[in-house]
Image 1 (tube, one colour):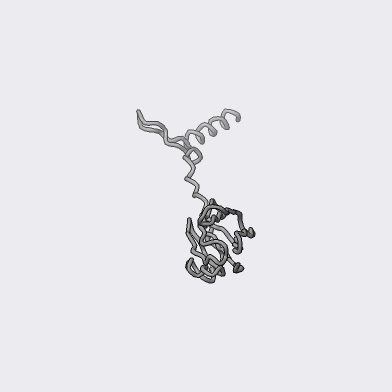
Image 2 (image 1 turned 90 degrees about the vertical axis):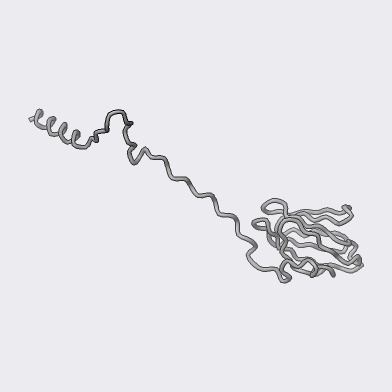
Length: 141
């Protein structure tokens, strides 16, 4: 009886094997195949809401605006704010840097930051995917 079971097992195992042609390596099994490449993470979305003044930096001239900035932008301002203009740079995934035209004033921060430069307040509302949503308000000097 044991011999019969061993013979049946040998036939069953032999029936599962696959013969390869001479000189070719065996085909990989399904578990030995290379894993499929993983997808890269999706980029962070742009700000979740639109700025009231869009990307128009001229809307900020009087010191009051809400704009979206991507990369680096120069914003002209009235000298009555104590700053004749400033450059806004989106620095990394969640930080904004602002600098006065004369280079004497610099500030930086992420969402929620309130950056003061003389008579100008720059609020960082949101920064995502290299784009910042900023609100500016100014007090004339």
